Length: 432
Ligand SMILES: *Cc1c(COP(=O)(O)O)cnc(C)c1O
Ligand code: SF4
Image (cartoon, rainbow, N blue to C red; front, top):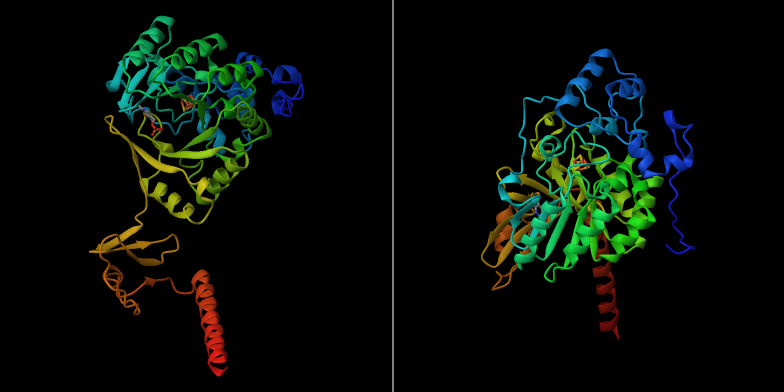
């Protein structure tokens, strides 16, 4: 970074129970990793857990990895047992380990080389580590926390790269984990360098939650490596408006300044972001830090996460309440990943209401319905008041709008005014 970098690495002060930690330590991602919150006793102390809950944490720790960076932990409000950040990251007695699947997306079955899942025709998922700086309770790759199928040795990475080199149809490699940005810098450099050296790999994507959970990881030397191997797109993972802090905003800004465009994947989580107001605040907040919402994921039936799952209808309600109601850039694609390796399936409210030869009936976000002349030979429009959707399909009527909708009231008032003005002009002209 140049000396006059307007966005230097500056990560704020230690807070809460860490307030006595020196700012230099707090701002150092290695200090954060050395001081992870990872024992039931420490969580109990920080959150004032009752003994039963501490016992639940202790039991669950044997099942799934548990660690939280002090920075991310400091976002929890310890006085609120329902705190959304806590719900995402701290084990709780709500977790039922008897329910759910180990590999809900069936990634293992599409594995063609170590860490490499080749499911879609022209792109692959490349899982290069099973480590994260903090572990989400709803992670779909929990299976890797015990027996990792990530490419973790140099030899495994080389095998995966050999596959990619041999498969010219692959234009796009999505490097993920775990969190690839937890790897030592020379390994990140090695992986990206080898991927970019493959002529048919047009660009690399990375999936990382570090901007959210360990923003101090976005160091100058990391940015230099990412810049060197560009074009790199990075998808990060914000789930709640409270994760948008000065620190995470700065991490995103620094990535931007180094030529890394940012997208975001949000997981729809019960008790975290499953109400429209929270979701809207999150998505609009992301635009303010120039992060483009990409996917909204239905929480998959992964083991131990049943209490975080919502109905699919909740996701549809989200899209219904966003599309048209707010900036289109803020609206992600809602997807369900089909179990058994079916991949991502986009889910949308129905905007196509009906059809007849030459016409389709569409509805908008307000519930107004329109007769749209299709290509081909449209039926003549008679423009009479509609009695039913079929009047729109046949072209008898133009539209049906919700009663008392201010938008159409305004349009109609304006149209009337214009008509009146036209009449007056015509009358004046004829009078001449
Ligand atoms: C999500 C995913 C991708 C990338 O899909 P896009 O829709 O292009 O973002 C690639 N491979 C696998 C296995 C995935 O799950
Ligand atoms: S950061 Fe991503 S990979 Fe890591 S635990 Fe959370 S969801 Fe899983």
